[in-house]
Image (cartoon, rainbow, N blue to C red; front, top):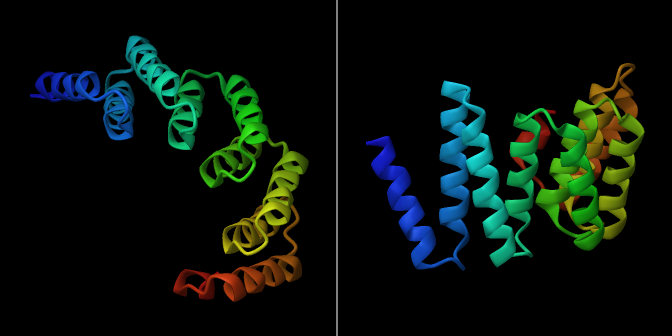
Amino acid sequence: ARTLYLGHLEQANSMDPERLTPYISLADSLVDDYSMQRDPALLDQALAVVSRGIDRLPDSASLVAKRADILEARGELNAAIMDLEQMSRKYPDSVPIRERLILAYLKTDSLEKAQAAITDGIALMPGEGTWYEALGDYYSSIREPNIALAMEAYLNAYRREPTRALLFK
């Protein structure tokens, strides 16, 4: 059944190569299969699917973020960071790319770069609560948490985008 499902996704991808969903679904399925089977060829296939999608849809932040996920799964986190940095410069107001870049910086313990990416997000999109929330998360998760700065950032996020989740932070 799984092979049939993947075949249908490939067929959907071939029939309408300008649609994003088949690329993402197919890559996700291959990565899921990799997580169960640990066959590196599945990551190679997923990367090929995403690369084909980026060739067709070069402005897709979702595909770029997915490529970073695949590179990370292959153990190539530095390559993922370089890719995300390049795309972040090209599309500075892309939320998914910036979020994925911040996560990659945190995973490599590049805290200054993570903080800079967050503050750049605030400067580029001051009305977005997302970046203030990310700043609060950053301040509360560093080795020596700064609760005062975290609370201030969370309050700024809540002022811009009031959500119940922010109330519990």
